[in-house]
Image (cartoon, rainbow, N blue to C red; front, side):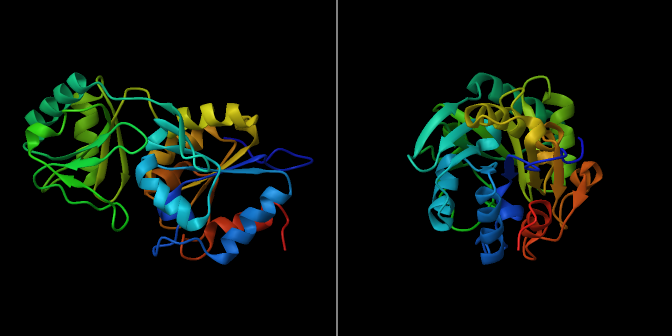
Length: 274
C-alpha cells in the first residue's frame, strides 16, 4: 500500500466495510460520519460499501441508512445496485466442493455447526443444528436439518466449532480445505467458506471498474481479517481501533472506533472538511 496520491483530489473512491466500521454498535451511522461522507462525495469522491453480508442481509441496513449506491456484498460474490435492488454480478460455491470441504474440516476438528447462505438477490440463510447467529441483530435465518443445507444454489457457508476459537477454526479450515474453498474470519462467530479466489478485493475491483476509478485512487476502511485483501488492493488502508490484530498489522493508519466516528475523523482530515 502507498500513501495518498499528491495533488488534486486525495482519493476518488472511499470504500467502507459495514459492520464494525461504518455502522456503530447500535447499527446506525452517526450524523458526523454521514456529514463527512457527504463532504467527500461533494469534493468529487464516490462512496462504496464493501460488506461480508449478502445483499439480502445488507438491504435492510442500506434502506435504514439511506444508501442507494453500488455495494459489494457477500465477501465479493455480489456486486449489488442498492438503489435498484438489482444484482449486477453473482458468484456461487459449488455444492459438491462445499460438501467435500466440510467433510475434510470435520475430519480434522470434529462436528461443526453450519449455516448455508443461498445464492440470489433474496437468498435465505439456512441454519443447521447448533448454529448460533452472531451477525448483527434480527437477521432472518431458517432452521433446517443438516441434510437440507446444501439443497439449493449456494453463495457461501458459515461454520462454527464448540471449543475452537474463530482464529483456530479458520486456520484449521484453511490448512485442510484451502485448496478447495476460500476461508475467512469475518467477525465474532463468523468463519466463512467461499468460492476459491473470492475476496472483498475481487468484488471491489469489479465495482471500481464500473465506477471508473482505480485502486491507486481508493482509501479503504475495515476491522476484520476479511478486509485484508481490500487493504492490499487499495492505495491506503485504515483500520478501526477495535480491529483484529491481523488487520491492524498491515494498516497504513489506525483510527478511532466505529462508535467514536473513526471513519469521519480520517475523512475530515484527508478531504479537509469542516
